[in-house]
Amino acid sequence: MDGNHGMFTEILKQKDLETAYGVEIHSEALYLACEITVRHSNVLFANEEVGSDNFEDLLQEKAFGLVKNACLRLRHDLDTDAEENALDTDEYLLYRAHVELEEIKKEKDHGKRIWIPRVEKEYQDLMDKWDRFMRTRCFWRGEELQMLQQVRQGLVSFMQEAEEDKKTEMKPTFGMAQCFSSLLTELLLSTLENHQQNLAVTPRLVSEAASPLTGFPASWLLCGSKPPLQDLESRLSERLVGQDRVSFLICRALSRQKSGPGPLGSFLFLFGSGRGRTEHAKALAKNLFDDDKLLTEVDMSDYGESDSASRLFGAPSSGEECGAGGLLTEAVKKRPFGVILLDNVDRAHPAVTDLLIKIF
Image 1 (cartoon, rainbow, N blue to C red):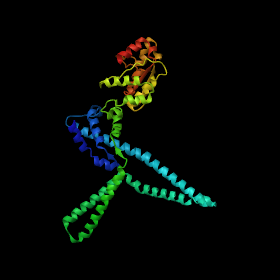
Image 2: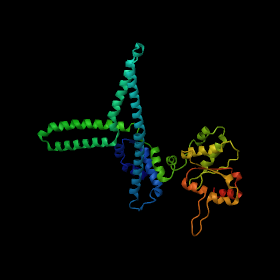
Image 3: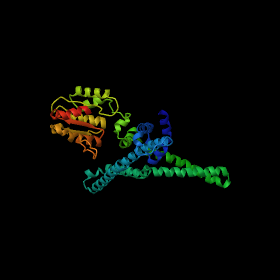
Image 4: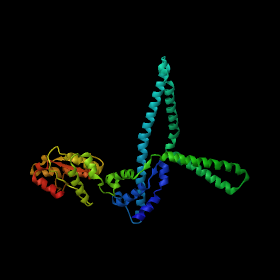
């Protein structure tokens, strides 16, 4: 697998993507893309015909796609949020400074007019910032970088031909082309540096791009498709005051759990209401799945009858038709990853709890 990773990293065309999207791609992000592609190839190729002859090419293509999607996510976030917010803020500040300056100039009170130089300086500083922003904004796109590269490549080709030709009349033009090429190189490097400032494709972005494709939470993909258990106890203790013992027991049980199908852990809380059962479940959802809303709550007091299990688990399928889904089974189908909180288990019918025990 290590050999594949090295090979993939070379083929991912890192510089091409960096130039096209104006970002910097961390080598760790490339490595993670290759790792996810290899580990979850069965899911990523579920709807494709894969043979031994094209398997390696498909792996490379999928890894390239993950990194490209991460670039797109980063570019989209910048273009739709940060850039527009900065533009709106600067425009508002500039307009406000202009209004303040005009109002102070109208003042007849000498005591208030002493503020004119300060407001003028503020207005001029904002104008300079606005001018710089508008001048550099066009360089925040990959198309401009590609255009600069094409022009520079054209000049390089021209100089190579001129040098081979060695005609006297070409020498002045050759010198001018050399000068232009040098200037373009500097412009290209500075533009690329502006592009990549604070625009880094990290492993986190790659994991977020791969999460909907693999079905695994982004935080798990960062940890090798395993639940992020590092410092889990301290993270739970920060949210749950006075429950250190409970957090310790939960984390110890999860750390013993081996990867594979089935629940990572099943816990029976034997304390009464108001002691943090729901909060524990929300904290686990937040720390294991990055979202405390990934919590399915079921009030087991609604299943006090012996025949109520079908509402929870669904009706069995017959030979002619498929059985109806239950509340719990349908919730797990929709969200295979998450926390299930079965509240008031002691009020459920023993037949229902027996089934739960068998499943868990």
